[in-house]
Length: 189
Image (cartoon, rainbow, N blue to C red; front, side, top):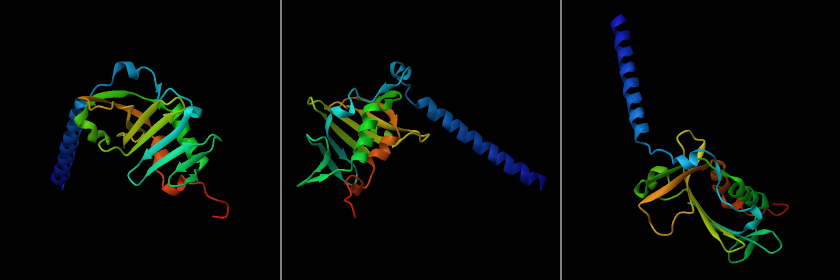
């Protein structure tokens, strides 16, 4: 009986040692963060909520064009304009305007799939009232489940390296919604 317990204990210790060694090797291969971006958090973008006049969200299940009317209300721009759910739009706008970047990693572009960025979970195209355009590509959740991998304002031409940035997990909740949550519900529905 005692030798059976020792054998099981040795198997468990060997398994733990192998898994620990594998994790150590994996962490050694991770790229080191950019020192300039790790010292302090920076905003995702440098604009205010009120500066945004249009959003285009490309998700796996749908593509959605949102437009701000001169009255200040948001509509879904299709064949005809449908009133958008203000709370849903404002939640996303607030995250885009006030959200913080955590740290960034420069990685080879061919590793984009490792971060869920090829293809991305969602892409948000942002148009400001002065005509500036911004793009946010959202990828997978980080290993600890606290952040998302993202690419902020990716270059238009393919590059050898890409910058992967950690962004708030709330962005996933803001864009991964059923289409009906973007549409304003009429009273009585």
